[in-house]
Length: 325
Ligand SMILES: NC(=O)c1ccc[n+]([C@@H]2O[C@H](COP(=O)([O-])OP(=O)(O)OC[C@H]3O[C@@H](n4cnc5c(N)ncnc54)[C@H](O)[C@@H]3O)[C@@H](O)[C@H]2O)c1
Image (cartoon, rainbow, N blue to C red):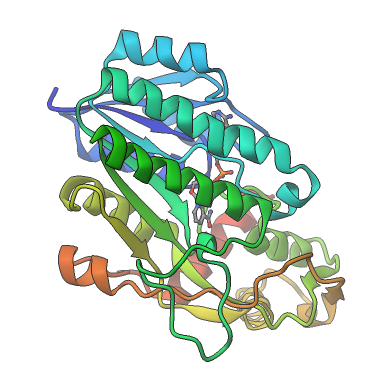
């Protein structure tokens, strides 16, 4: 085996896609997946990989320092790709503590175990939300933008990014950080925006939209994100940060309109689903706009999104319609 890699958060949305890519593409690597299997996870998506002999799963909570250290001591991972996190902003507003415990202290447990037993790279998967938000005409976040997180979720991710960088500076470990925009695609928990819209339309229920629906998000297809992680993990420069965006900025309302139109075109709903749109009280501290400048990853590593937004939005809708049947 050239590498013995631990992927944390492997049973979550992005983790399940990354795991499949690495297990299938790198048959000479041993890939271990770690997940505590919270409500946001689903092992079904990784079931087919269990017959592969370059894959092993561990149900471990990264908040459990002793278990994390024991795992690294016995498995001697070369590298880590760290995705395990509490990931839903609304939940972080209700219960910030678990976000600090998992996203900050859990990351610290992994960093300490890595520092002691690993020799390769610690790739930390983070979010563009650490940068705060933008006005409509501001230029997009780049890797030099100051951190200014708004929600307990983004504050916890920002803190974990800082610890990862501090471990590089202080202890000299090889780290790399990717900060990406909103992912979409199959396997995402139904609490998230796109699955919620699709489910509401299928069930003819109100589609809840915060405020006036004019908040802008950049949408990144999950497979494009996986390709970016693969590139950065293998070819990125030690200690660096790379922003990963999808070049698909849309207001929340425009996104809902697009999904409504696709679902009507495909015959997934009979009536005009736009009438289900229901504006609800805005989220506390709601960021107005996120936009990512991906120039660095594009120019240094030759990565850019390869999927067309409307094509993969449409195939994503097909996937959820089938999954939610
Ligand atoms: N989804 C996005 O749009 C997006 C955007 C930017 C960054 N990210 C980051 O990417 C990573 C993955 O996001 P996702 O959307 O796949 O999230 P997700 O919520 O779908 O998956 C997270 C996974 O982590 C696991 N987990 C949670 N707490 C754990 C703990 N204490 N110990 C072990 N495992 C635990 C969960 O069981 C789940 O399987 C996160 O770090 C997130 O901050 C996500």
